[in-house]
Length: 149
Image (cartoon, rainbow, N blue to C red; front, side):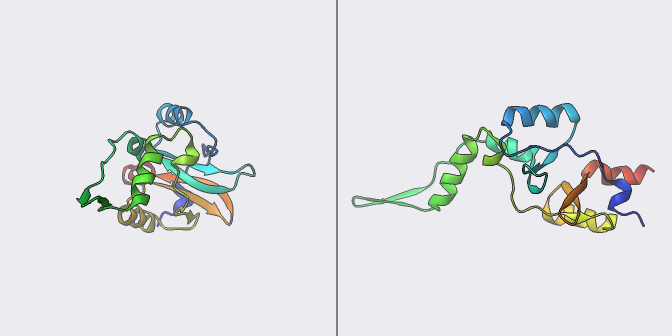
């Protein structure tokens, strides 16, 4: 059975949290990739950012439902959700959009387990780790390529 090390890309393109979103979009577009790991100054993985994060930035702002009762106004939705949406829409750097809780695999993880992770968690870019060290990345195209070879 194939494992992560058999299909992963070892020349991993990464960004830092200070990377402007315009630069990130160029990296994704020019390299035909859907996401990149976010690393700190020591090269340690701190998150991941994908095309869907950029697309979410451009969605319309959802105006929260409110109820007026006498002189008071009550929001029927969480104030935190509204603040998060505003932060996403106004984001200019990777730091404001990237996902901090990253699902990773190691080089020995079987392909069927990776495919299961992708479908169950709806994630399509998975970093491959050796301890704390980023050694590769697997995208949905890498998994699909296993059907061809």
